[in-house]
Length: 519
Image (cartoon, rainbow, N blue to C red):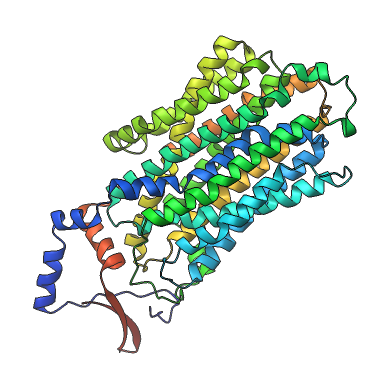
């Protein structure tokens, strides 16, 4: 693409000859365009399956990693805070790096995004397994877990960024993209459910009520060998999902070529593209709003098990509460998809705030009946908080393309920068909140905690997520939501993304002019 002397990209589309106009008109009929952009059930299903392993692993780490580091590995709370913060920051920092390299990568026979997903698979599986392995030394355990958590988060980013950006290269049809996103979110919810269920069932004996009774029996380093064995088995089971699901993704999904993007990956630089994306108002407001909402969901997930174990008498209900949350989220996702298509993409946002009064109720009245109601409602809210941003992001990308008229290739930057900012907010929230446990005197491996620790856990499970969710919703609801592109706009984007076009540069009146020629 030619760049004008002022430094901005100039785009002009010359009037095609009569026969080309006729051809373009013929290929842009709604029915033809709709048929060309439709995705099969198998493609959507395999695309959704590709997102399962990261969600299985993320679910296990979200609910159990903090408990594992505090009560099994018996690392001080301050070191646990550094491990969680460092891992999240490394994952966030990997997002723009992933976007940069993926944006400049060459197209291969498997596409431009698929090789990144497949290449990360074996390494991320190994990093996840060693994250739950208890090393024989005790002095440097914090360094061990910091290393493998950072490695796991970075590799998960290089897996997730091209996988989610693949949505834009499946089809030019906005409704089909929303449908594929719904399949992905549903399968990821199923993966989240599977991760919490499988991992939780395997390691449940390591955190049962008998743990304090068995604590009187001397064991090396104060760590139960049975707990170490159970966590290693659970890690191996989860790690296996990566090669299995990645293989199904490769077999069932074909990445469509993007002829208007150069095969060498050259074009608009990553930094220039990032500068353009963060200055786009709808994208900026979407990111800022979900900084708070996603951080609230992460805090709620990370402290639920600790709250049930140390701040209430719900330790016997942990597994069932986690399952209630996840089953509710999975079952409500199709309902939220229908609401999203029927009433627009701002209406479902009100479903996120439903969990606010119930979270406060659980902190005030931590009894089993209330806990199960809160778990069900939280699952409904979490489902829409996960579905909504990924459904709005493709519309933001289309809105950007229509306004700025840049050629395609910025999808990866949009997706990677969004994940970067949300991970960074989650890292800050988890790091600060875990550090607060150190300040109030949390004792690693202790069967009973002080009253200050109990109060802190209640605040972290109730007040903190409430403030974050309300702040994020206020920002989201007052902002302009990009509308789903009309058929005319969709056809324009379709032509620019999928038609066999070439770019020619002409010199007219002393300025560069970029001409789009469609065959």
